[in-house]
Amino acid sequence: MSAAWRSLAVLSLAELLALGLWFSASAVLPALSREWGLGDGGRAGLTIAVQAGFIAGTLASALGNLPDVWPPRALMTAAIALGVLANTALALWVESLTPALILRFVTGVSMAGVYPPAMKIMATWFREGRGLAIGILIGALTVGSATPHLIRGVTDLPWRGTLLVASTLAAAGAVIVQLRVSEGPHRFPSARFDPRMAWAVFRERGPRLACFGYLGHMWELYAMWAWIGLFLAESLQANGGPSYAGLNASGAAFVVIAAGAAGCWAGGVVSDRWGRTTLTMAAMALSGACAATIGLTFGGPPLLTLAVAIAWGITIVADSAQFSTAITELSPAAYVGTALTTQTCVGFALTMASIWLVPPLVGSAGWGWAFAALAVGPALGVVAMGRLRTLPESAKLAGGRR
Image 1 (cartoon, rainbow, N blue to C red):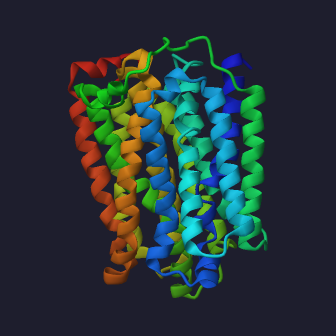
Image 2: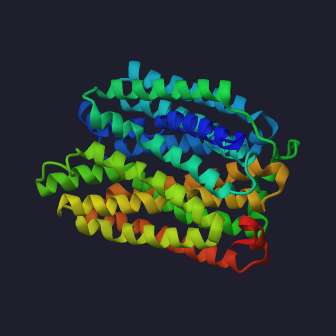
Image 3: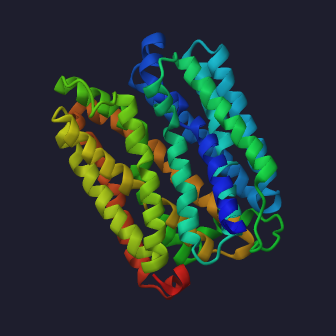
């Protein structure tokens, strides 16, 4: 195995272990709702607090050019450690919603130092095949985000125990980053501090359209990840069925989200071979169709609901890495880390609206229509990437494969 692929494997493992912190509270929402008497606002708030923290962290990171002026390995290690401390404090000492929201916000801030720097490190190991490499990395992130559902699905741990397991796994990820992760031979040029570069990604047509495509993708992705577990649980209850092919709702949610890893791998292969815009437009069309139709299966045969959910889980994240890869190819080389961080900051800001939107839609229109509202994002994303495909700048993508 080459040094590049070894580094990909090590960094992907670290990312998988660390990202369990993101949805650790979402995976235990039923237990928290019962113990703390949470309503729709409280449940949504626990997820949105992480998104808000991530936005604050990425904004500060982008304005300070941190991924470009700080060693990314040191930034990742410190950020994971901060997330472990916040998640562990929630597990051990918190008894009510307000301090939980504060600690979930801190967890989100920490994730801002894990995700974008990891993408930059991986880009230094790959020029050819960069789409596949970052796709595999995002696939690891996807599985990591789903691990709290797995812990909940295969154990009888109380919610505090589930959070502690997630913290332990993330701490192992920090150790791996510190001891085994390094930048590759294709390092980006050194950067000087320049806060104006935080918004440079929106000044040029190519990066701007790639960001608009990413926004359409993000409108759908995190709202689906946040609420698919509750949807599956309530659909199974409405049907009266015993399980999803032997899986409880938490286990099914893990399968649905983790299936996205296969989509990330396939998306990387297709994107490197046939083009970034080709893959992103196709993936958004398919995931948008799933968003529009999965509500129609609510309360229906569990296997049908699970099949549509898995198809959605695969397609909804198949394009995720390719928007980031496009930014590494279209942005000024010295500020790739800053551009990636700005892109993720704006994208995650949008997720707060879509995550918050789903519960009131469920209350007013039912699950049959709540997820359909998410299909608007990928539809607009297809338009943005179609426009990018027509520009001369798109020749920079995937070695000329648009």
